[in-house]
Length: 294
Length: 295
Image (cartoon, rainbow over all chains, first blue to last red; front, side):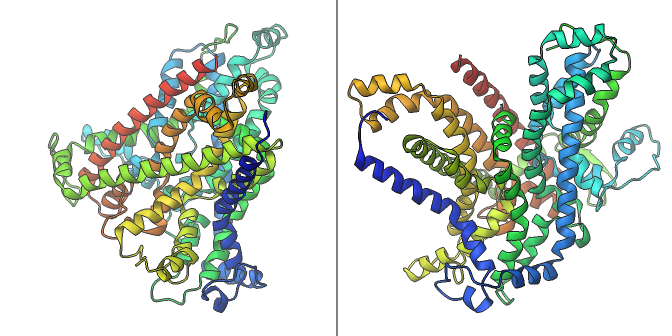
């Protein structure tokens, strides 16, 4: 920056390149393995130049693991979570910022509490609710020795994959924070013009939130696609597996032919969609990442 | 909090918050409450009766060696993962910031592990560390290391730590680069004129100015290592061998969902809730501080 430091510069470049190579290596290695025939993958050292069998390996992985159904499931789940999270968050934030109502602060704190309750720490009871949506009522009725006869299971359904993950404290806070920065005059003017609250939302607030929505979209889509524990719990039928869960079945077991090339081809199929989203929408992604965590 | 110019409406705000409220109550608060209640109860295996046993579940938990060891393993795993990925992220961000005018290219080259699911990161590293077919595993074996993550607990732990921290490097990189770019040039130039070399400037000026970012990232990395790494462990070692990589979160899953121990699992959930509450409070204190530092 200020002085000339050729030696330090050289080492800086060298270490940076080395770092990039180290970080990128697992993905490159996966890509190469996915392009090789079985005999080459099992060689040591495995060649580090891509072969020509990529399509064949992908086809083998898709057939062996039913990846086409799983890709579709993952896509629907990620999209459902994204649209759901953004929709419920933006309208809750709108209500909390622009309406004076009795349980405003209570609602805010209830949403805030979800931050402290990741699915990992309430696995069983959440599973019970998903297995029967009316189980809370059942328990409440039982206290009074009454029977609540309705059952409704979300297991092995798209709603089961999506709904429990749709609440979002961070997204709600992000919108709330953004709405608080909007000038007061916007609401005053639209009131004066006789707009209803929902007209104000659709015509003014929503269009202004578009950048925030785009930034959130990328990050929520990627985390939605990458969900693992919850899909593992609520889906038992292979036809409802998401690709991140399903592709793990391609990992060769001890007594199987070690088809790591097929496994890596499957891994590639599972990883490429979120990687593409992050790389192509990098600007939005970085913005979303930084603001999402505030 | 509330806008000065706002609406009064008897129904609309309730309608607007109801979707999120329903999900929060049904899938978050009710299950958390149920876990709290179950943690103080034992139920017979047929689900017929329950008895209130106060802190017996917790006592049993801490009396088992396995659980106490799991605490220790979680600590080792989380601290190593956080430390490794923070150092890598900081080093790469510092180098990028030092020598490159255009930072977007490096950012693009370093950002992709973020998009890889923890379970997929586990799968990639499982292959790399495979003693026979993986390049790193085979390299270790042929150099005299008896590398075998399937049988050796320490090896398994090293593997999951590396897989988990690799995935988090990009995250730390993005935040560190942002923090580094916010360090005022004028201060660095003044220090250079006073004769401080590049390394001295980094340690004496940049690092202290970066401390809010560092604290923030330490908390975020610990949260990540605690909760989001379930996929890494499940996809690679499944807590094994012999429970060597069974972290607290993995144990809630394996004892509760696989082992069907309701009371014990609920007690574990409650312990994790306490840890999360502490981490969240620390996180908010840190964020407050960060805002304060930035003026």
